[in-house]
Image (cartoon, rainbow, N blue to C red; front, side, top):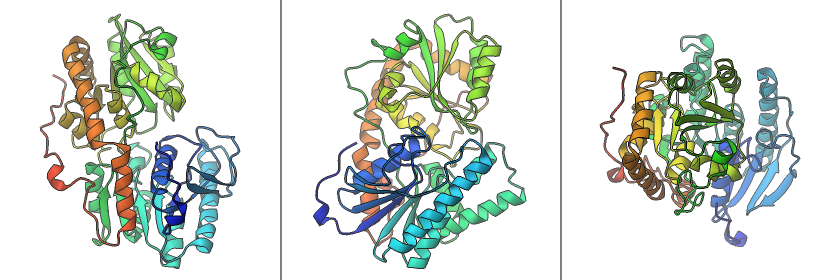
Amino acid sequence: MPVADAECSQRTQKIWVISEVYYPDDNPTGYFLTGIAEGLAKEFDVRVLCTQPSYTVRGKEAPRNENHRGVSIDRVWSTTFDKNILPLRLVNSLTVSLSIFLKMLWGLRRKDRVLVVNVPPISPLAVGLACRLRGVEYTLLIHDVYPDAVAAAGMLRTTSVLYRMLNRVFGVLLNSARHVVVLGRDMFQRISDKRRDKTVCVTMIPNWADLELVPRTQHVGEENAIRQQFKLDGKFVVQYSGNMGLTHNLDVIVAAARDMQNDVDLHFLLVGSGARKTWVTETVANENLHNVTVADRRPREELNDLLLAADVSVISFLPAMAGVSVPSRLYNVMAVGCPVIAVADPESELARTVAEERIGWVVPPNDVVAFRAAVDEAKSNPAELAAMRVRARRAAEVRFSYSQVVQAYRELLKTNSSTPKSIWDQSEMKPETDISVRRAA
């Protein structure tokens, strides 16, 4: 991630970046908002409002105020109860929202611009209210669509009173923004359908690939520390790396591993954390699935070795997740040149990217037979797998670089006019692709 220029004296317009999670937390939200803020700091006076670290480095005390890589960071007060206990997590979000609201109400000026991410979903409401009271436009960055994500996870029925109430609250937030940024074409469509105020401009700006993550000369499995640690040398490794959350389809992976135990050259490596981690660990142990290794989340500095340990990477979602979430891990998987098995709705950004770039297989959610067939084909066709690696890296370089993404945010936040639907000209967007979906016989 490039360091911001030292041109502070020339940066007059102030941009507020609001994210509960920020550096030194490096979970996806913290990592990407940190990168966006530091990229904006090359042209703007950037001020971040966030909390003390509460995710990947929970317990670490960071300075209340500091300037890091050209960005002025203000860590507001909030309660720090255990975020894994839902009522306590709600209290944390309420207190941080109040702190952010008061800070913005005091400090906002009419010419300022505001960028706020909607994860967690409470604080953007406080930001929206403060902006309205101070007459300031704000841009809403959507990482996950609520309450749709909660419904897709099976935690809330779309016919329930609570769902309708939350959907109305999200609608108020959405229609009060000047701009809305989404991460994929499927999310663009979903948000456009939800938008009542057609003057609200919806723009697609994806997350980026860390192209410096791996030298071009390295290859999958070559003297790899992760393979050596888990004794996987000589194995064909199917890897799942990332959040093991309620919307991620881990059942299809475990079921396939159960059915494929007789293949002694095949191994499943599941790495990460999240709400379903306990279920995965207990299932693998109780069923004695010797072809599965479950490991804890690795620090970001080990991401290189982790992704290079895979012969093929799995990114999996439950049904009805198209337009709800776009997995940022896809772009780093592409950056290291790893083919992908996408367990996803065919209209999702994930499935469309995999199909358009010809870098893997698209499998319908919950279709274990199709998933096994994709693994078998990947394992039995090394020439095609090698070609996919080249295409994946090339696509990451051409479509998903850090410089492209940050420049799109700069243009969005410094303009007073409406913006196009995508950071790419519509003529450059690939047409609807015939996605070859593997289905059970």
